[in-house]
Length: 402
Ligand code: PMT
Image 1 (cartoon, rainbow, N blue to C red):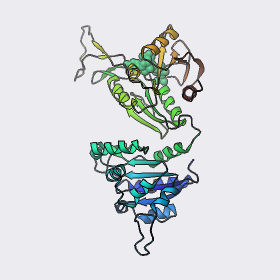
Image 2: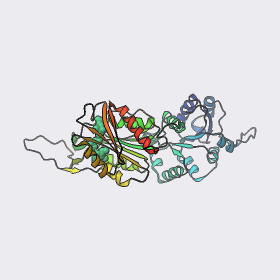
Image 3: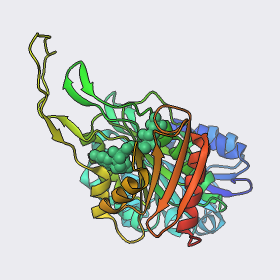
Image 4: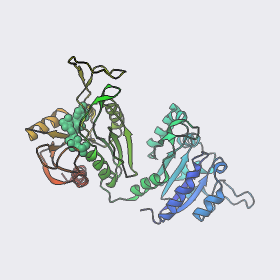
């Protein structure tokens, strides 16, 4: 999708600037024409010679070339671009972009740029979390810029937290998706819950269920394939997400899944609740391993929050909420009752009475029931294919082709 595209790569003064060389290499390999624009601080971290060798174009970083007096037109650059990506973007550059402080070539180019702008922040965790940075990022979003959220991990400071610039492969995938206009969920943000939840009894025991996460992960891949940006809130599973557009949040308990999902819902266009969430959790959790005795033991349980029902309460016009129901009897009426009670738009029914359906297996057999009366049966097939069919139904619904 990037073949022939004109891309401005803005590089600022962060240690993550070393990753920009690889990002540039990937963009060139995809067939893009790339013009690098650097801030003065960016040049302290990586040399323009490295970048111009990779891009085949002189790097622009000053308004004038010192010895010739040649003026570099930020306006022409802004008009030339099909996209501008600032990676890494420091807190300082983000602040200047948000507030129109055009004191260097990069920010003046940004202000002149009519093309879509992507910003990949890179900074220490406390700088990223600071109210000022967050407010500036919100401002950039309100201007229509796309923020490629930083990853969580070890930072240059040796602290661990959120602030690492997203990996170049993932940034390229974001751009690639952006330019692929054929994808039905392009520009959509989808939150998916997957897997079981574990409710602790003591440090070695929990209440759980048989969910493997396979159905939820297949949905995440299918949504990402369809062009969506996906937030996958995963309970304890031993699966790996593959697509670069999937941002995974690991949780253990229903309470943790509730908090993570609700926090993401506001920005989501679609939410798919595929997790098998434990309905109850032990009222108290022992700090030490409970000893075996010959006495009967009573475990008091308290109800967990209902994530889907909470999203149903918060649902705004235009948001699509999809639930799952795994039933063992009175399947359709139970599923419809859940759809009603939780204010869902669709419910995907799978029954443990069907061979090859439900927990753990690689296949599923489902009926996708719509609030507006539709009902589509998907025969038993691999979960990846079932997920693709479900995504197809949702995409057609969103496009008005009900
Ligand atoms: O993970 P796999 O091994 O691939 O198995 C897939 C699956 C069988 C888990 C999946 O296909 C499935 O059916 N998931 C829903 C399981 C279920 O029975 O949910 P429920 O009937 O308890 O809940 C109905 C809906 O409310 C579900 O969308 C559920 O995610 C949601 N819910 C339930 C309870 C709760 N506290 N919060 C919720 O959000």
